[in-house]
Image (cartoon, rainbow, N blue to C red; front, side, top):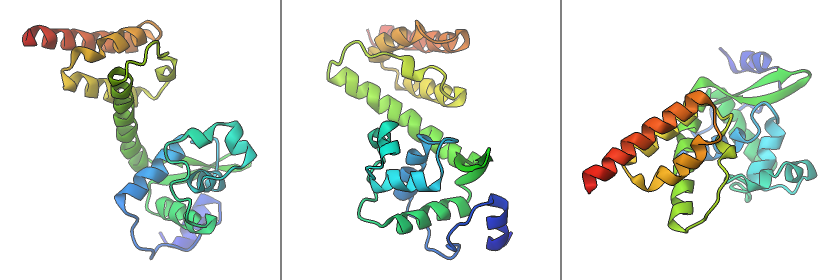
Amino acid sequence: MTFDMLKVTLGVEVAAVPRRKALPEHEILLILRAADDIIAQGGRTMLAKILKGSKDKRLLEHELDRCPAYGCFSSLTLDEIMQKIDWMIHHGYLKTEYFGKLPLIVFTDKGWMIEREQRAEEFLREWDFWLDNGIPGVSMEYLKDRNRGMITLFLEKVKQTGNPKYIPLLRQWEQIDYKKVRAMIRDVIKHLESSKMGRG
């Protein structure tokens, strides 16, 4: 597919960047992380503003300034950031789809595979931070209604640690989620409890 054909397929004007030097891995991860917070809700411009660290009213109203990738390209112009986003689209990490009349950013399968792994790792680091700092009473509602594949991956990562320190958080989560997720959580708790007995 030529680049002109790509623009027609996307139904949106993108910068001509097919010959642009490949983005480094850390930039790909940052752009995917920023995109995750606006999937099917915002377009290329909104994504660029998050990465820029814009004080745009709509962005702040949706608390997108809390995204870990917010402002990571603050030293670049919006046009330079847009070129990076268009590189991501051209190389199959992101795409735009129309919802009504609006072209919105969504993941490709390739982009989601990478982001799913990144978010599962982020959740685990977050749990480590809470436990290491004695932060009590964290609501697990934020994990409910998440992508099932990502939740399964996250639980597998918790399981692989073999560390029973996660059991209290798992029990909190088990109380509020759906039946299938509760069953997966119980399986992880059982595994971590057996690991605890093995240590004892």
